[in-house]
Image (tube, rainbow, N blue to C red):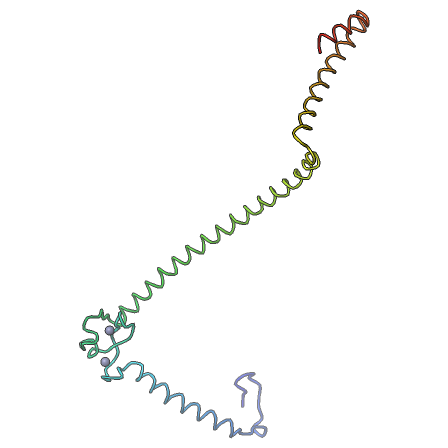
Amino acid sequence: MECPICRGQIQKKHFRPNWDLANIVGKVRQWDSSRSSVEEAEVNLCVKHKKSLDLFCEEDREAVCVVCERSPEHSSHTVLLLEEAAQKCKEQIQTHLQTLKGEREKLKEFQVRGERESQEWMDFRSTLTRCEKAKLQQLVGVSPELEKRVVNSYRINKALKETLKTFKGTEEGEGRHVSVTAGEEEL
Ligand SMILES: [Zn+2]
Ligand SMILES: [Zn+2]
């Protein structure tokens, strides 16, 4: 005898029937076959008219039989063949999926753009912070008057430098006296 799983040889003397298991298997088999036949019949038959449910009412979103279709309850409703309704449902799902796919793509794009923008923003922020720190150190306590004075002193400095240049140039050539006059003219 051969084991159905490992295909190893089994000695018949080691073979011991498991009656409990056999009972359970038997009951499950019985229950399974009876249940599936009953259920199939119930699923496909109208509860009210015991006719097969070949139609689908769009308004009520339920399967109906031919008698149901002719009843006043569904007279004003759109009733399709079950296959037709299934096809329509499938198409609707497809369209819906397509829309979802498109939206997902858009979201992805937004995410990528958002990440890029936030990266740019972070770079900008860090640059700004660096600049701010440097600028703040320069600007802290600067009043308009002080600013004016700084600008003025810059102008004076420039003028002085120009004067000094002239002074130096003339010092070498024509002597101290001339250069001082030239410097005064400059100022
Ligand atoms: Zn019916
Ligand atoms: Zn209906």
